[in-house]
Length: 302
Image 1 (tube, rainbow, N blue to C red):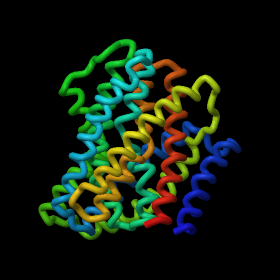
Image 2 (cartoon, rainbow, N blue to C red):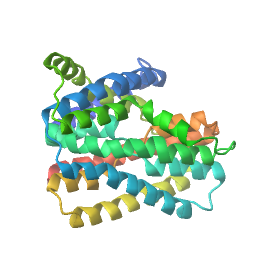
Image 3 (cartoon, rainbow, N blue to C red):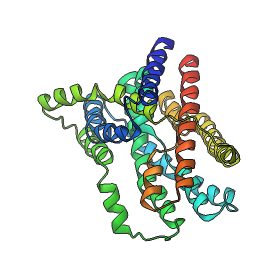
Image 4 (cartoon, helix red, strand yellow):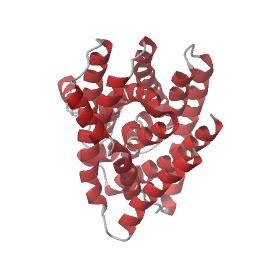
């Protein structure tokens, strides 16, 4: 397992070095991200759900994630109540979402293989609703222009998420015991092989270790809130949920995953200040490093 993590760190480092030596730029990461979210990740989901059987209990995972997002939003409104409007919106967007498909999948596959991907795929279904639902609404509400959404727009936003739609379709096919044509699965399997290296390279490209002095206090405040909530609820659910060990590991680790990178996109869309966008990017990077350490520890304990 240490060797697998060494490979992962090497690829992430390679992405970072490619950026540092100006072979690639962060804007190139936008193209890689589109390839991942629109091609390789959906392909991986199709292959994963075609090979395994979804237990009824797994349907509870998205519900747990959505309920957790609602609860942390309520606590976040209290914890960050004294922050100025735009910073509060930034923190709340970051607090309720998770970076599952891009960050967790390569590491989960290295630890648990295809079985682990099934559990975390179901976790990501709930995370997608949180990111494109709750986080999106909060970001819009606390922007300078205020809330300008309605239910139809939110549903359209969810419907445009190719990974989410792929999850839903793949889940329905699996539960209906309908298998896609073998040729389609073979093509998807080939494409899915690129998901892990591309995801890790992208993480490296977006890594940024520049932390301005004035951002230290708000960053620490956010991290205290996020990981306190994640640990509290994760440990409680791990010991009290009456399900198999992999289910409980998924909940515990899932609630400690990095903040969703989509918060940056939302901040740009809602015309947040450059300072807020940089703060969101900094926090997102720090949570990635912290979560890598957490997963490494779990991989060596389990």
